[in-house]
Image (cartoon, rainbow, N blue to C red; front, side):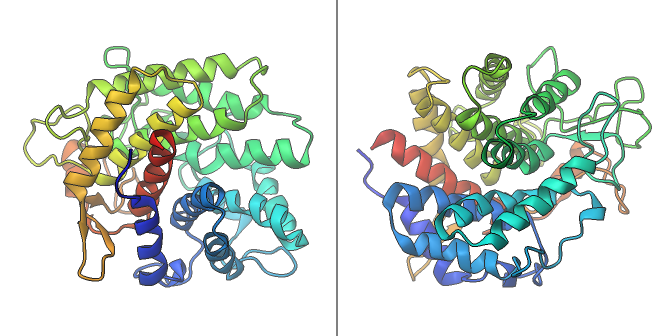
Length: 371
């Protein structure tokens, strides 16, 4: 039995410390995907507990952006940024609960982006228009679960193959035959400074990018009809990926490194957001029957490690989640080159929203599993 409900402690900490996520340091009211990570944790906790305050927290944070006509403050479709889809995942619960048309209209606006979003020659979404012909693992979490839920909710499930294809293509192009891990990104044209010109691949296995991808898989498999032709294919991708990730789990602590296959290399560090994402994906995979009960030992070790390695409570009792990589990407104006030195150089911070959101999701899923 679980002694401490870290999910509730974490949710209460967030509500007290940053009641308006968009006013948190550095966000300045912009439409940022980070909020969606946190708010999906609140949605999970609301569904588990029935506590209305968690739903209300989602609504208050989303209502700053969702206007009465269904437009979204700070969102510009023409940017074609797959990250900007992520917060849309909250619109389904908001519409279902309130029946307010603005939520449905906002979801339709994000769906419209996906209708014209640029793609690779095989039909995979570019990560952003400013990153042409590139698949990043991060993008699967940002776009695919929203896309699938929209099709199932508002389009009678037509076109679901386009969602599953995103995973199949990304695995095809990023999987490493030796380790079974997926590289952070792939450039179809092979011309980016960060990629191998022969393979188009970025050079490292970044923990959080693998976490995004693993979370995307379990979230999609939760609602993908089991009879769909690609269901087994996606279930295999999940099983093989998590098995590869499990091989890189730090034996002593149970958690994972920033560059997950180079734990003994100078400068590498145990990283909170990726470790939380893996706990979430494994616990949910077990709950959905996608992983067998042999995985419980793995997730027990990982969950205990996340608490021991990263969590400290303040004098107010609030959760501090330490050792989060603030951000990492490839290319752009600062020419992020994907090297080991690059990933290790990014700031390491406390209470990054992506990390705290992933931790909340991990706790809620794990506690449900072990209840």
